[in-house]
Image (cartoon, rainbow, N blue to C red):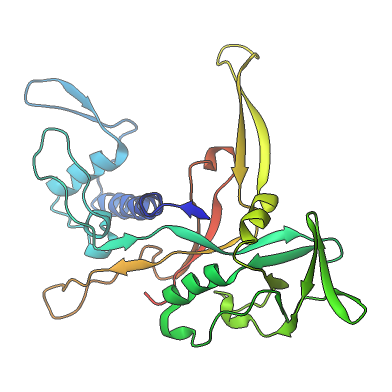
Length: 284
């Protein structure tokens, strides 16, 4: 049920903030009427030409112009400084830490619906721990459906039909809105903990792909991919170590600027069209 590790989530957040810092530096350098070259390099003390990235060039120019990056735009403060080759003690501890993301609700095709979001008590218990005091009720019992789910009624009993068989709903039309992170109560059903693995396996998107040779249209190898279906709802906790600015106020973490919602890629398959997620921060 693990979707993305804490380190991969941190990497994506770091990249988003790094791009924001680069844009800020570029604006500040242009405001000083400095020309940004088409290529980025410099000569070291030995006369060797060293190629740089645009961000590295902007950092060097900012240091020359005595431009200080605001703390809220410095990803090295929040996510820790990476190791620098040839330098000792170059790493620093991050102020923001992420745990792995796990599924809360996964959409499954169901004839007549056509999509039903499925979860289980164990997944909802983890969501409750992460949500904290915002949820005060116990997770719903297995075979409970939401108010927005309309199941087929046979002999006075509501049933859902999946590829693996049918599911009898014992507690229909319950208010499950508190168990949806964004408050929108979708057509949903809670199943038993020992059944969720089979349903997850059934719902995964699978595709066989071919990698071609670089210089000719010939298959190099075949590989299979698996991805969570579109509409899957996941949750992950964020821990922030409070650090003062020096004037009695705490540093404010703003990974997406002034908004609490953005779209980024999570996971390692974004190059083939997977991992596009809408991220919403709550309680931070």
